Length: 297
Ligand code: GRG
Image (cartoon, rainbow, N blue to C red; front, side, top):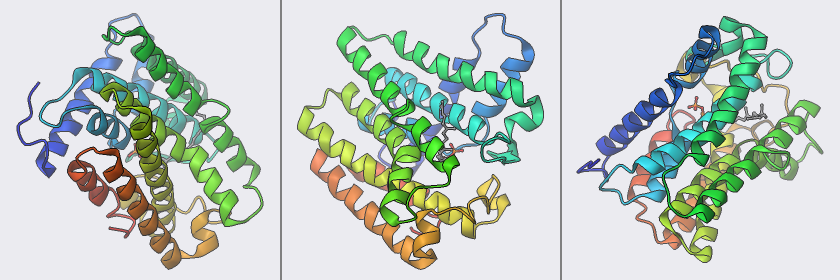
């Protein structure tokens, strides 16, 4: 698939369109799935989203003049894990949110039991997609699977959520940033690293890519917390004000200092990106778009 001006804003829109098509195809299995489960999965996965994680996979994996079907599949797997986590996060026993991706949260439409099952189905399908990737090198495939598993598991998202439920740790910036790392940074890092693995990057370059994604993820979670404090639910497309009583970085530092810290994370992300040797242009365009709503771009 060729995409002539992938280096421009238009090309980012085209890439997001290709990501949407890939996700839509991924849920149309053709297998006899109960309609309620299929609809719940589609509702959660295909709602309006920025698709930042699959776009990152692709921008790091591929030559920017073409859309790469394997990078799209890998991005779809990461997006399914992310969506599975959002469905669980919105449940009454977790963040108890009513709106997600400009729609009622999945459990509000399909009930809690089906929402949990939809989340498990998404998680499972993500690894099925990686296992079925059309790449010859089995070792590469295993590295991709291992990278994603590390990000989801009890060293990653699951641990972050548990700490969040426990009500954050020591009430200082370092522990709040550690929580941000687990809740958001690890999956950003996995997305970027999986892109780097597909590109065949050497270990030292992959290190810069991980550093880029770590800083971007920290900035992104901080921006998400700023949105929770400052945006309307309509602009955010999800519940806001849920974190008012949490010990997160924004509540610790205040809004202006958090914006500044976010800008500093983005500057460090940019420096690491340049060191990785990847053309920084398209990822810079992506970052500029992403951080508009939080007032940090
Ligand atoms: C077993 C997959 C799994 C997870 C269990 C529930 C859980 C552990 C983790 C949830 C962690 C969580 C909700 C982190 C927040 C991440 C975040 C910044 C979400 C918003 O992401 P966007 O803005 O959303 O990219 P869109 O809708 O654009 O994709």
